Every structure is written in C-alpha cells, then in structure tokens.
Image (cartoon, rainbow, N blue to C red; front, side):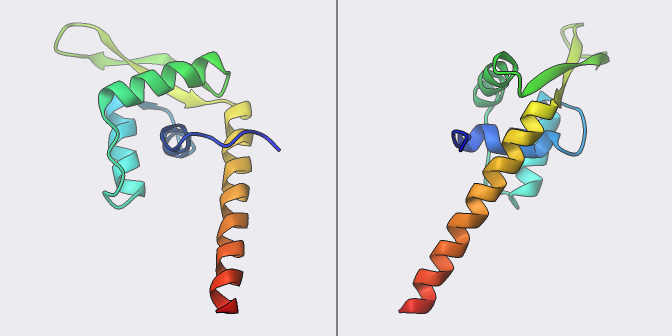
Length: 108
C-alpha cells in the first residue's frame, strides 16, 4: 500500500483532478470542495506543489496565464497520471477507514 498523502497534498490533487489551475485557483477550489472547511495559505500551497512536482504527482502545465501585477505569467499546474493514481489510492484508503468507523459505531 502506498503512503498516505498529507492533507494539503490530498486537497491540492483533488482540486487539480478536474483541470489545470494556478495557485490562487487551487486555493479557491480547495475552499469550495471543503465547503470552506479547509483553507490553505500560499506558503502551504506552493511548498506542497513543489514537493508534488518533485515526486512526479503534479507537473507545470504548458500554458501561461495572464500577467500578474508584477508582470510575470501565472503558472498553471496539472495532476499527472501518477498523481491521479496516488489520489485514487488515498480515496480508497479513506473510504476503508470510514467503513471501519461505521462498523464500530453500529457495534455500540
């Protein structure tokens, strides 16, 4: 069984599962998917993205977004097939934990 993803990595991969996004777009999608329950700051997002890129779970998307205030292009990120496999593995792991918790709850 693969190692579990960190919560930040899980949420970032989940946010990228439906399409390429830039950092702020990832932040907004994580908020939306968690109904506002998970707020990832810029440092967490970009630090985690760097680790995900280094491990081959995320890649920089080839397109450049509009220029930002400082004149640089926004970087877009995409989930890789390896990242999608890791995300699916973690979802299965979490589903198994929820099933076990339900069994324990019903046994009371």
